[in-house]
Image (cartoon, rainbow, N blue to C red; front, side, top):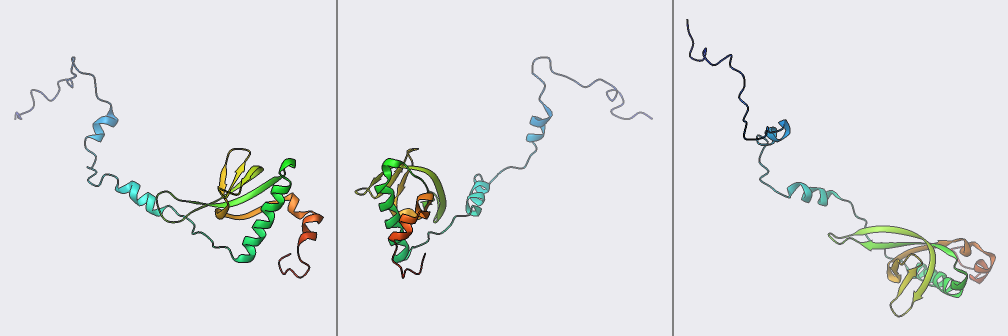
Length: 152
């Protein structure tokens, strides 16, 4: 019994001579699902990205930071190395991230309320959480603190 496609079933696969062969990856892409919600995936990723909330310092911590900035200002010619942890607000959503920069302070601008590092990083004094360095562990610094200070 003869079937309807018996005359073409054994013929070779047709290849166009005028157009290039499409790669398998591109051929599969034409059958992929349609992305109706363009940008939805990136919006979900952005929403899932974690940010920290800003810590408000108490008066004692602010006074301690001010004292450390005064010490850095007095020793700025010696270029002591310090580590400054500060809050950088996020540009896209509420919150931000805490960044620690280690290096030498180039200038403390009291008018702009900013600290400029040698690597041109500018840090707002209001955003500073903590300042550390070897110069703060010295005997002279410990001697400047009041004897009844509960935070040695």
